[in-house]
Image 1 (cartoon, rainbow, N blue to C red):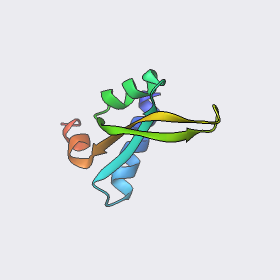
Image 2 (cartoon, rainbow, N blue to C red; image 1 turned 60 degrees about the vertical axis):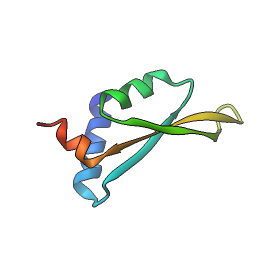
Image 3 (cartoon, rainbow, N blue to C red; image 1 turned 120 degrees about the horizontal axis):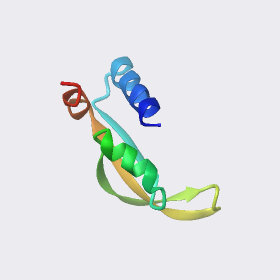
Image 4 (cartoon, one colour; image 1 turned 180 degrees about the vertical axis):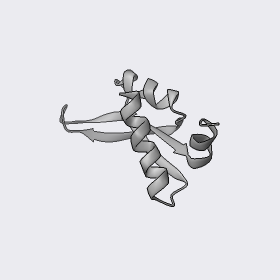
Amino acid sequence: MSEAVAASIAWFFDATNYDTLHSGVFHFNRASLAIQTRLGFTETGRSSLLCLARDAEVEHIDTQLTRSVWKARDT
């Protein structure tokens, strides 16, 4: 999964002029958070989002990855 996410991030920064990629995970999805952390994402806060699978508002861990952090990991 890390390889697929890394390829998607590389495409995003190569194909756009955005300096920040915003993402996040529901609080119970520690595996996805671990992948994001490994790839350089940092936590920016918490929010509450509708989880369709649970049909309820669920705590969400908001994350972001900057272009500079992403590029620095390649060097």
